[in-house]
Length: 199
Image (cartoon, rainbow, N blue to C red; front, side):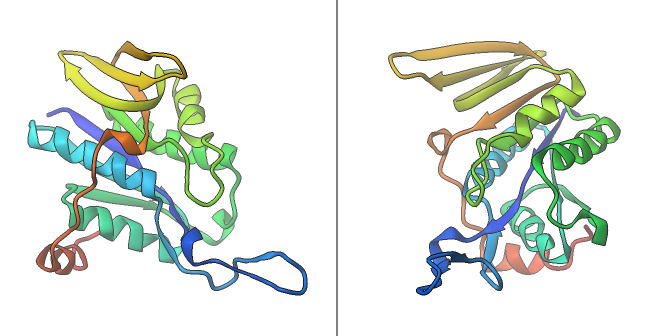
């Protein structure tokens, strides 16, 4: 059975951040977190592949609270979730995060890796491309439409003046945009079941 691995981030909920009136700085301490919006699109795309017979797996790097993002993905319908955690992994940069995810991908051996185009809090867009670089696999960025034909992935992406269609042999890594789909909202029953699943 082919496997798709989705790398997700438990990000700051930027819609609920506040600003210190005296310093003008954004207050991040104690700010609420959620699965990054673009990552929800990546999970939804993995679920479409799951409906076609693929195994859908999610992974994240982060503290204990990051399990909330994994549980949301499980509630959406993925098959399993992996959590890379530890006190020494707090506040990692994109290079270290991508390295850890690449090492996990080497063990999980996915046919396809999906990432959101960027996280909603830092918006660097570096983790996905760096994972592809560590693994020495093809990477297609800013994908708005995706299909798999045999051992090949066919991706469509928007450029300033045209739509581009790109093909790559799998294994490959794809970073997706919001345009690719509308993520499903899990039911209460699915959320309850996900809370009991092993991570």
